[in-house]
Each structure stands twice: as C-alpha cells, then as structure tokens.
Length: 240
Image (cartoon, helix red, strand yellow):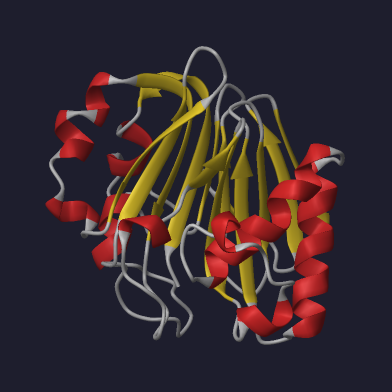
C-alpha cells in the first residue's frame, strides 16, 4: 500500500525528511506500523521530489528498496530545498515493478503520490492516451486523471472531488493522495493512515509519524475521509 511524506518549511537537505527520526520514511519501507492489511513491507522502489529555486520540481526515482540506494545519503544530502515529497512503494499484485511506476509523478510545478489501491482502475477511470501514463498502475492513472483538472481549479477542491468520484465507483478503494507545488501540501485520508506534524515554521504530512516514540509526540492523526491543506504557517483539515 506504500508510504509517503511531504515537507514544506525552511530549507533542508533533500534527504532529511526521508531519513530523519527513529521511524523515518526509510524505516517505514521495511518496518511500517500501520499498513491496515495492505501488505507488510514497501520494497518495490522509492522516489523523492524537491523544488528548485525557480519553483520547478526535480525528481529522483529508483525501482530498488530505499535502504539499498546510496544516492539518498550521498547525493540528495548535498541538495537543499524548502519542499520535499517522498514515497516508498509496495506494488499491487499484477502491477509492474519499475522506476516509472514509482511516485512521485511530476508535471509543471506539481508532484504527486498515491498511498492505497484503486481496484480495476482501468475500468473506473477514463482511458487516457498511452503517452499520459508513465506506467500501467492505478497511481499513474489517478495522476493522469488529476493533472488536467489542476489547470483551472483549486487543488484541494480537485482532490476532494476526485476522491469522492473514485470512491463512489469503487467503495473498496484506498485513496490517500498527496500533492505539492513547492509551497503548499494537499492530502487526503481515505481508508488509510495519515498524520500531520506542524511547529509553526514547517509542516510535515506522513503516512505514519516519523518519531519512534509510541505516543507519536508532536503528531496528530488525520481523521478518515478528510482533506488536509497545509503550509508552514497553517494546517486546515476538512471532511470529504
């Protein structure tokens, strides 16, 4: 079912949001706490996006387990950014395991990740042009459906509407979506775990708290069927 994380705040080394904490996103790849029956480990690749000074996202992805790739510590630690989106993947049975299938998916100023599953996605979503899909996966198809809607509408409203439409078509879907434009994080909690940490200067949204303390100090859970809009100075959670 994957795990993902988004950070917006003061500049940090790009690897830091992914590796810091006793229960970092990297650790969640092999020792997640709350998969809710959606697998046991997230070893089918990973990806990290960050934003350059001109506001465009850059990206690194690998089809290998995140704990095996030295680039995370040796290369991404040399780059700083005010926004980072990371994801580790647990491939759904029948879907490809490849670099192209790993989030984040990026276009223009946006980066996107999906934590969950959309069964029979090819029957639920309008068939996109082959060139619009980076991989034959539910996550890539959701991104292809989402991307055009972002051109002329509020991203939070778009996410909420898309999740509502997909859930109506497939009530068994798990639809935790995470979107960032380098300044704002938008996320949905829909039949999967999601947490927020906000200190007034930065905000992190993650599938699980990255703090290893059992009480998740500094984190608060996001209620199911919720939309989160988060910036360094504010976090707003509304019902979907």
